[in-house]
Length: 251
Image (cartoon, rainbow, N blue to C red; front, side, top):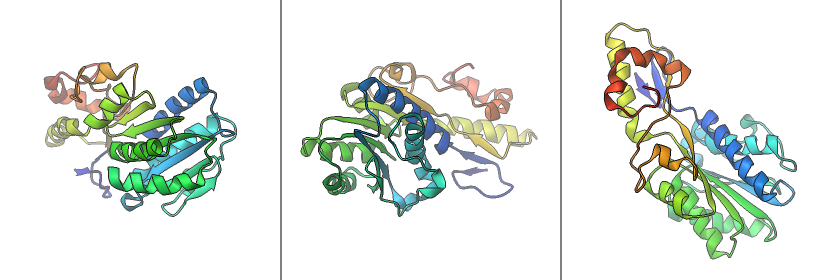
């Protein structure tokens, strides 16, 4: 079995970045609609980390595509046309290489703000919670408070920001600390002679202020409940392993 790294003919356990990004973008769309924001008055910042490759960066890029396809004024494009080298796509969307740390994101976002007119709303979707936090600090230091933030990771900093920061509207979570449960179930299936699918998908969910207490404990970022299994993961039910953890939705 392989985690994250795909090898032909080897069972693969990995998250679906494109799907999670799209779902997060749909939630951002709903929140932007409620504010009256669209491409005519808003700049979307795709906060990428060029070093980690296109598959990982499909997350925040797909988030933008979902927004662009739903709201007027945003430049429509496709995932394959946004590469690590892409910067300005139009006035309504820029891609910034922020890395995955607070400091690098702060510096990169601070530089990028020089090209984003002060009269435009700003939406940031970061590849990690740290990248979003760094970008948010740069925006705050520049007096840019008309913003909407989306993080990724579901770590303590991101969950706390979602709960406490009114501008932090959504969090993508792939529940990495719980991956071991699924790997144990996959291993049990494998040694039992089950033919595993090419890809078993990690748990993913879009976390909002409305549902954060469904998935996480009221304080901190300890997971309370995981989302139900994806259709391709249903074979794991027969192993009985996940049921022992009593935290997977529907089991």
